[in-house]
Amino acid sequence: MCVSKDSVCFDSYTCDYKGFVCKSKFDVAVDAYDTQLRKYNDLVDKFNVLNSAYEQAQSEKAAAVSELEAAQAKARRMSDCIDRVDTVEGAKACY
Image (cartoon, rainbow, N blue to C red):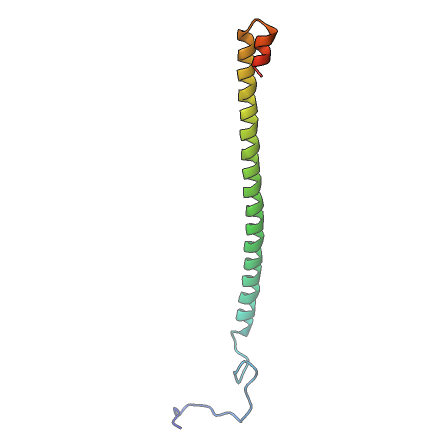
């Protein structure tokens, strides 16, 4: 097996479970990155839950407003109808 002249040889079984002979200088950075990534993913999940609840509330609000507007329009039509008639039977027909 050919290696460069400045290669360092190690004894057998010097690797840890990650496959490196020495603790990597990047292990701390990788752990910090993974921690931040988990926090980010948790925040994304929370945002998605809150956003879904918000959209549901907006949809329910829109439905309620639509229902209210329909009821108001019906009340205006009934009021206008009653204003135009001059008998009780005519008023009953407005409903």
